[in-house]
Length: 383
Image (cartoon, rainbow, N blue to C red):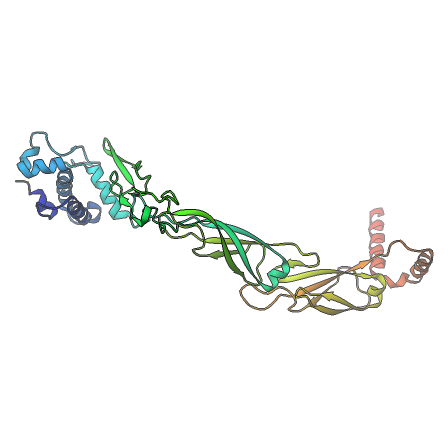
């Protein structure tokens, strides 16, 4: 059976350009690939035929020979590529199958693997991190602050293109814009980053003098940020598009602000609740009374101390804590009493305390209860 004309196999006219031939081949290869046509027994032979045709027509010298002599140009061992055994049985019908399959793989699986392989003409800018330390009061009320961020911004001279006078970059002649070059090593095709364009796929003939062709320059930028009320240590705020400028006009990265709330001398935070330890005298704890305590908003609240209060006793002030970050009201504030023992007593104070201690043997229930338990423990040990 006579071979079909290679142009007919690919469905292109004889005067088709290299790009038209490549486009037609990829379309045919995707349509006829055996993995996509398991139910069509003739798909594999058609796929081989397409590969053989493309292997000849993609090469300028082979194409010229074919245009002049037809299939006779490759008879007698002058064919266009290896005819090694196919894994699983059956020969390949000529053609540089490894290279051809690599092209097909790009189209078949490029979307799944994250887009076509090859260099990027524009690279997204890096994300930036800014650590912001603030007080508890600022976290309570929210904060608007201007920060200075050292970053790379788009070059104003070239408009981010990297070319002098705003000229557009040109396609790299070595890799034809792919950013990678391929080398055949036996059956395998090895891809490497293009040495000419460093994987960018484009080259700049006249680089901008201001940025050296990068399309961006280093500069400190003032940025006004709004920190919402209720943030706490570890809160992360993302500002989209406020990171480094992209390379050669690529999109900007993001800026992440990490919050650290400094310790407060009066309040300890636990989520949206606040805790405040308040010292009281023995007399105030025993007799009861009122004390005035501060609140995080700068106000004051009066708290009634019950008579006979002990150290560690807590009293709650509703809605006097921190605001919830995403709404939902405020937490509570807890007052914890710390009964203070007096120091540096005068002789008269010691005398009064000794007298008071003798008179208060029946007024210390916790002490009496503790020593009853101790006596029971010791008696048990003796038994």
